[in-house]
Image (tube, rainbow, N blue to C red):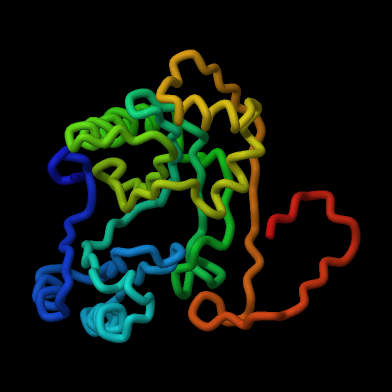
Length: 252
């Protein structure tokens, strides 16, 4: 749909067979992105620095089923250079309310190193999410997305969470989720001065036209604490002790 709607995104191929995926891989320069096409708790993306590494990722997903049935189909994509931005919109199918932009940090290690995770921390609003940029995203990405859904007979009501890459050519779509982002939600909700319930009910009822949403002027940040070995082989059942009085909110 992204291609059909001329929505900027990475060059990619979708495959259910290893041999076809490897053949397409040869047409891309490294680094290369390999994604499980199904739901993998936000951890189904691997960035390969070499073709050998990408080949291993494809085989592990499709033959080794490291993500279960989520890896029955894989996407092999060109790597986009830039800064990531998370953008959430709540839509009634035609209109939408744009929430503050956010940035999360996906790599498990310090200095943006190691495996991709579901997110090790986030902050909002993102400095790169200027009014000019958000307007561009609405016109080149969000509006044609909803138009494309309606063209398919889908009146989508709910949350559209776009993972974007801010490239030299402009913002491009990495992925869409039909849910709120994690950990982005933990930094978006504190910035919402209006009841979330009113926003969601109005979207579900198909009419956001009468709703007035107020956003706070502050900023929010969250840090994720993860078990040893996460995300590949996390250790379960460990006791966690937080000493002293916590002045901030802890989510679990």
